[in-house]
Length: 146
Image 1 (cartoon, rainbow, N blue to C red):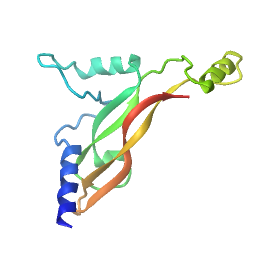
Image 2 (tube, helix red, strand yellow):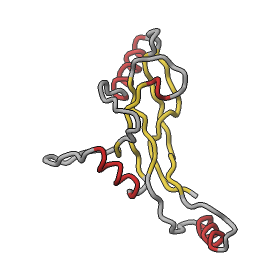
Image 3 (tube, rainbow, N blue to C red):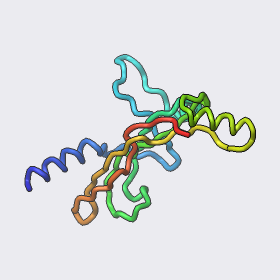
Image 4 (cartoon, rainbow, N blue to C red):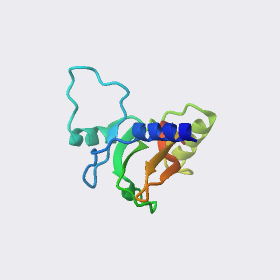
């Protein structure tokens, strides 16, 4: 039992980054595995502009648990990951080819969309000092679909 708690605590520490809260309306930043040395991180405004034109990718946003809108009372901040970006209209599958043809005829609408292909759980400590685990809360990988 103690080993399980230590593991859960370790996972929590990896998923939480205290003090990273941003004001309302912040949209997050792309998840970067490694940042080259000697480079300056761009300001948030520049990231938002790039996000609109960037390819489908995983983004990260620190959020207070209360802002998740799931009814949990906690002072903790979790890292919420989501998918955003543009998807090319190029058809790579039989489905894509058919859908592109139907769109061209006006019989189908919409286009490929950026969506999660895998999810990850998030854990946090609530105000009553109980661990809460939210299955499949954050995206873990993204891809264009449709």
